[in-house]
Structures are given as C-alpha cells and as structure tokens.
Amino acid sequence: MNLFKRFSQRLGFMILTLVVMSFLIFLLVEIMPGDVAQTVLGQSATPESLAALRESMGLNDPLMVRYGHWAGKFIRGDLGESLYMRGIQINTIFWRKVGHSIILALTALIFYVPLSLFFGVFAGVKAGKLPDSIISFFGLATMALPEFVSGIILITLFAIKIPLLPITSIIPIGETLWENLNILILPALSITLVMFGYVSRMQRSSMLTVMNSDYIRAAILKGMPRGYVIFRHALKNALLPTITIIGMNMGWLFGGLIVVETLFGFPGLGSLTLSAIKTRDVPLLEASVLFITFIFVVSTFITDMMYLFLNPRIRFKGSDS
Amino acid sequence: MKTILLHLKNNPLAILGIMILFLWIFAALFGPALLSYNYTEMDMEHQMTTPGEYGHLLGTDALGRDVFARIIYGSRSILTVALMTSLVSSIVGILIGFTAGYFGSLVDTFFLRAMDILMAIPPLVLSMVVLGILGDSSFLSLTLIVSIAFTPATARVARGALLSCKGSEYVDAARIRGESHFIIMFVEILPNTIGPIIVEITARFAYSIMMIASLGFLGVGLQPPTPDWGMMVIENKSIIRAASWTVLYPSLAIASLVIAVSLFSDFVSKVMIHEK
Image (tube, rainbow over all chains, first blue to last red; front, side, top):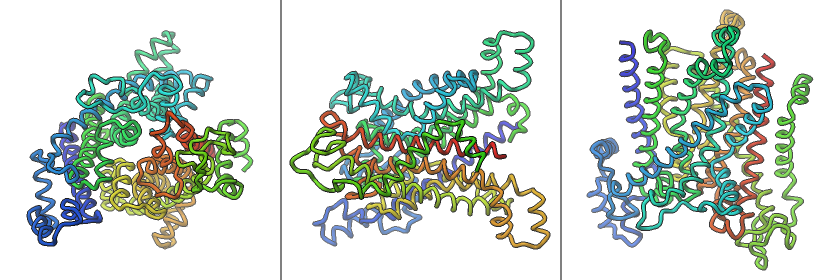
C-alpha cells in the first residue's frame, strides 16, 4: 500500500515539475530579444505583412492563451514548424537526432558503468593501499575535466598520434549511424572519463561502508573466503546506492552530451539545441530544452521506483520515506 | 594552522594542486606584463607557427596570434569569473537555504519542492539557454546566470549545515535572550557552519571553472576579443590536424587549473572533516 502511495506521490510531482518547467521555458523564450515575425520574414518585410503574420501566428494573443495553445499542441505530439528551416516540421528531424543521442548515451553507459563499478569495488576493497590511491587520483582528475577537454586529449591520442578513429563524428549524407558505428567511440569515451571518477568514487565509499559493517566482519571472522564474502554478501548491498547515483545522473549526462556533440559535430539532440539557440529558432529550442528536462525527470522517477523496488526494507515497510 | 600544515605534509597531491593554483594566480596577476606579445596582436608573417619558432613559445593560431599570450590573458577572465560565481552562488545559497531551514514547516517544504523543480534542468543547459537568449555575454551576465544555475545546489548544502546546528543549546539560549532571527541565523549559527560552507565554496570553485570553460566552448561565454580558453578550443578545432597546439594547449591549461582546484578542494574537505 505504501509503495502505491509513494508511486502516486512521485508521479504527481513529476507531472508538476514538467508543467512548471514547460511554463518557465516558454517564458524564457518569450523574453528573447527580437521579433519572431521579423525573423521569419526578414528585414525587408512591410509593416502590413508583419502585422498579418503576427495575427496568423497568434502572437497578439495574451500570454496564457499562447502557452495553452503551445502546450496543447505539444501534448498531442505536434512540435510545430522550425523557424530557421522554413517549412520543415520539427517532428521530421527531431526524433532522429534524439535517437542518435540516446544511442550515444547508451554507448557511454555500456563503457562507464562496468568500468567504474569494477574499479570502485576494487578501490574499496584495497582501501588505503596503492591501487586505491591511483584509482582515486585518476577519478578525481578525470571527473574535474570538462567533456571537451577529455575529448581533445582523446582526439590527440587516438585520432592524430595513432590514427585509429575519426576526429569528427559526422554521418555522411545518405548513410545511417549504424553504418558508422566507429564515430561513437571517442564521444562515448569522453563522457566515460568524466562519469568514471564520479561513479567509481561513490562505489568505493559505499563498498567501504558495507565492508566495515558488522555482518561482513562476522562473515570474514567466521572464516568464510574473502572473495566469497565480497561477491555474495557485500556487493549486493554496496551496488544499491551507486545504481541510484547512475540514474540520478542521467540528466547530467544529457547536459554533457551538448558539449561532446558540439566537439565532435555529432548530429544529436545536444548539437541541435545549441544550433537552435544560435539561429534563434524558438519552436525548436523549446522542444529541445523541454525534452532534456523530460528525460531528466523521467529517469529520476524510474530510479526512485527502482530503489524502492530493490530495497526490501522500503518495499515491505515503507518506513524509509 | 599547525594542523593544516601537518595535513599538508602527508598529502603531496594537495601540495601539487596548491602550487599549480598559485602558478596560475601569479600568471593572471603578473603574466600579461611580462609577455612579449599582446593577445590580439596578429603576426601576419607567422601564421600557425609551430611551438618554439620565431619567439612564439606555444606557436600561433590561424590568424598569427600568440597562443601562449592568449592562454595567459585567458587565465584572468576564467579565474575572476569562477571565483565570483562560487562566492555569489554560495552567498545566495546561504541566504535562501538558511531562511528555509531556520523557519521550517511550510517555508521549508516550498523551498525543497522549488529546488527539486529547478534541479530538473541541468545547470549547464540552463546557463547555455539563458546566456544564448540574452546574447553577448558580459562579465556580469555570465557571473549572475551561472550563480543562479548553481544556487539550488548551494542552498541545499547551506540548509543541511544549518539544520545540524539548529537544535544546539546556544541557539536556544540566543532565542531566550530575545535575539532577532537575523542575529541568530548569521551571528550565532553561521560561524558554526563555516566548515561545510568553506568545503562547498572550494568545490563550487572547481565546478565554476568547468562550467565557465564549457560555456566559452559552446560560444555563449565571454565574447571576443577577450581570450577565453574554451572558445580557443572550438575556434581552432577545425585546424587540429595541421596545428594541434592551438587546441591542445588551451585544453591542457583548463585541465591543469581544474585538477589543481579539485585537489585543493579535496584537501580542504579532508581537513574540515578531521577538524570535527
């Protein structure tokens, strides 16, 4: 029963967040300097044609009416028409780019989750010894780097010094991402370096906490093999907090994608968002930012639910909230 | 002070971090006066010179501008903006977080929910969109927008720090003496939460550098002719094969500064935990 209560609470909050954020994004774009009608028609437009366009685009309506209109279209899945690329429905380009970004994010996840869990556990088990110091320093250093700096270092090493991988991640015209999978490697590795430090640190500290708990000490003192205790008893409990951290960081990951995609010229949601800003493409910008928020909110919600489900103490008693 | 030195002795990485940080501060303060090139000066005869040739220590870019001079000048803007950002976001965070934690109940609930909602958009995306929309970022707009983007996080830390002291006897004593809420919050409680707050400010300084560099890279940071490390990277990325130094050295500058600050903030947090 408690599970259901928590579920509906979280769901309600998720919807509230989306509504508030969508309104904020709408407001933000509203204050953008420059006139939308002018942008569309160009500098040579006559005042009459500007006025006519404003009327037909509904720009003269009150703010709340326009928001309602925009949000309504959004919920029905109509993202509107791009301002910069005249006559192109955003839907026709948006979802392909979102797909690219999701594939890139998943590739990065496949790289960094096992790596950081493994080294985090390893550092936690060897706490205070040399391997721990090396892993901790490496993690601290890579975590601090902006994604484009680790990207440049990777490009210099694996695309210029050793010409293994492409410098840019552009998909040639007429081809799909699936025919060019090697363009994913360097961008995904750039994200991996940044996330590795963070996740492995979390894993190390939760491993330390578990290894110092009474039941693990009892198991070791009882004479059970250390490896067995680590894998059968400690890992189960030590992984839970890290899984939460990984889920909570999905939003951060998508923020990082903007930088990585710009560096490599990868055709995804991030580079699309940046170009929407540069070209002052209002509907495209609104769609992109709202979608990034959506991904973040949904992944937080799923993480929260997974945590509930994986933690028997909450699942059965529900006293932890 | 003595204990801090003792901690330093056992932490060679922290010494390294502090040394690099001081080197950059020195470069920002006195570097420009010692340079033989200006950051906008174009050496038309020596474009894309390799490092070390014709008196260009780190080479020149496609316009013949000295890479070393641009990096040294660039350290000024990134250090000042990052320092201001970490201070402003921490101060605003303390004001908001303390108010919420101190008054509790409805104020606190409203605060927590509002922060949760604001955190639904990554700080980088938020700053990028706002700065991009406003256009032509200045020192002031960059500092303010990044500070706002960081405030939900700093306010949460400040609130947590206040809550850990709120139940103490000295707070009750001050209340019974009839001190005002303002005095209790900022004269009684604040000095006792200074540890976690200093840790937060130094950690925030590292995030700020990372953020300012990324925003410069995305082209929404400080505008030319101010040399910006992040912008140098994206400007020259297309010539990375022919002149890798134009991209690699600014990247390494960012890397060295941000790692130095992280080592420093890691050290500060260890000392503060130990002090307790």
